[in-house]
Image 1 (tube, rainbow, N blue to C red):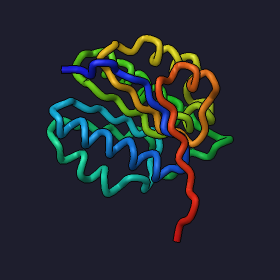
Image 2: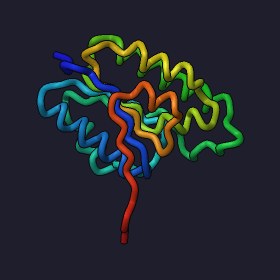
Image 3: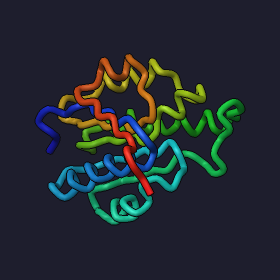
Length: 162
């Protein structure tokens, strides 16, 4: 099927907000008959309600790559590096396979910040993405090179919260 344009979108901001926005897009796409692949780079509570709904949809595939407890930012181990690399490699394969219309990389920047994956590898995915595939990255902070390659950048911030 595929999207007509296949945009690259960055959702920048607090964890649960950007994840929830991406999962909302996933459910909207799946409801229209598009196929969705979600790679979760962070094992968190962000978006858990929407995630439970998403995994029940036959057009949505969710892969959780991060482990608990969360890796310490300054001390990632070989397992963490291998898992992050596996997550990115799998996302690249799925984005270019023709099997998915929408690919979401949830909190991929944490793998970048912890040097678990290379920025250039992520940028290459953005450059090589097929035209009909939509790509969404949820990230608290965006590297300027990611912003340059993106078609749509949305920054979400909390104004007031109980």
